[in-house]
Image 1: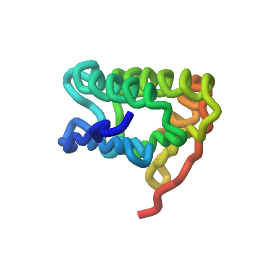
Image 2 (image 1 turned 135 degrees about the vertical axis):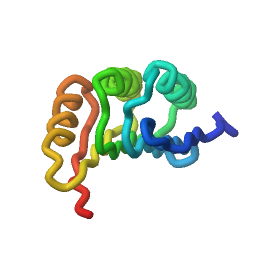
Image 3 (image 1 turned 45 degrees about the vertical axis):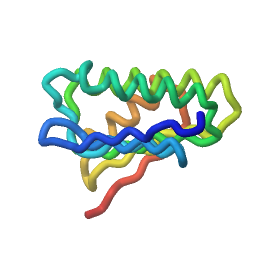
Length: 130
């Protein structure tokens, strides 16, 4: 889809920074995700991803580096991944999740592994050493 807008949302203390780039297929979610209304926060992300997938991108990387997310955010993130998984399974493209976690953050590492077992998309894990 030519001219598709990027999606940028500045992070807050309870909501992550969003930087979805339609030109290079790099979709970043960074920070902390404990929004008061996660469905309201994540719905525009899901809508954007659904629109983006319609453009049949050859590359799509969901880059996630969160230091914390609550249960509702996890559910919403999984919905995003399921949309991407459906695209991955129906296309022969380079799709992956880049799951980044802070050094020694075993909870976030384990959450990435749990999500990878649910969403059938290639996952890569990276420990971020500050």
